[in-house]
Image (tube, rainbow, N blue to C red; front, side, top):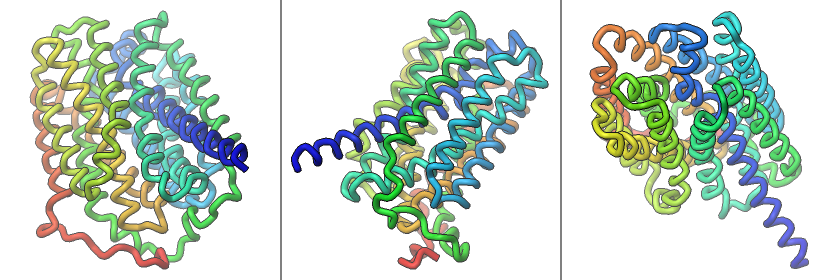
Length: 391
């Protein structure tokens, strides 16, 4: 009996590790690595800042398509995980072999769909494999996988001969993580954790405040994810130092595992207010990065705050629509990435018109508005939670 319990705990721990690695792959190594490698990509496949932003917007749209699939198919998490692996790996390989924008652009767009599929799929997988008392901490840990993924992506940029090998390596690592999740998942366990079949869209109305906040955070953060490293390089930071700053993003994101318990004890809207406020401060500092230690610190704060804010979104959704945690996560993450799509294009156009420093300051102002969604009950009152029927 004791051995059986020990095996169960070990399997659950292994599943959390595998899920964290899948998020690290689909987000940190594939979707967000586009911004890391953008200066190198532009050297191989010439693109203007505006064109690079449009590619990022297209990738964000693909993410939304993946997340919409998660919204519709919340009860089939294994299919979502399989789709996440297939799109992220295939897109990464396509980028690795691309010699023209004709191949690069659709590959970058396809690769980003994997992250949109992975988040709702893993919410459901974790929810049905772990006890209710452990689910919240496990979800925050898995979501924090973005941080280690960014760190590994930065190390690949420093150690590998070029960006193409980096994307090929990312495809292999992501596929291995997805395979591990599928092997460790037990589809028959606690089926009540899986979203019920859709009946009406009324439950979506309960997510209005977090969805608005997510959209604004996405629009603001897109400036850093797409142009952060390019901005550091144009400000006089060396290539290797700019990669170090990117690694700091990942270290900050990884640190959310340490702060997750403290944030989980706060109401989710308050956690959102704190974390998005920190994102705004970090973006404002990066507008004029100054000495390298300042830029590295700002990147670390941004990484921590952004990943912690996305964990707060998951918790906020679960509070508002408890019977539709996976679908709720998909809905608010769609809003987040729609914001990133809009923000990437807007930032690219603004960068060509007024320069990146002013663009970063405007992004920080947008993020202040996002933070306000966590504390504006009098202006945008929370609608009642979806009933236990999960309508």
